[in-house]
Image (cartoon, rainbow, N blue to C red; front, side, top):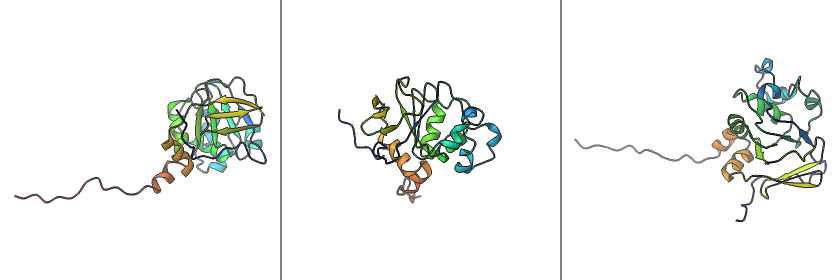
Length: 184
């Protein structure tokens, strides 16, 4: 079966290629953004505290287009939307993991981050140059290709729009009910 054309652009041809930020299994939302910062709603300000106390250099060194790679159950814990917002504010646009917590996955899409499943991330190392082509279903890191599961086109469209709110703003209004007159 041929893959459908992606609505997202590949990062492989960038002048300053993205790097991999590698994390392990069971990274929870408290590790991504500690609870004491939940009064902040600006993604850029949240990014200043991303992985604080877990991996402090992330907030200082992550750059636009970098790729976060993790093991199983990424984003477990609470359902806070602050976690994907902090990553988006840090310039992350794609998260590749062996699996995601269900609510984190949906929150990521809703704020405009693309969560991609790669069944085995063990061969991907921290700091490697990387690029993702969701349409081709591949992550290239350190010169090696890693297959990705296909993402439904409508989820790609939501991410490409910048998140669910922006996507919804672009939809046409559809009449679902019509006023009828009843005869008595």
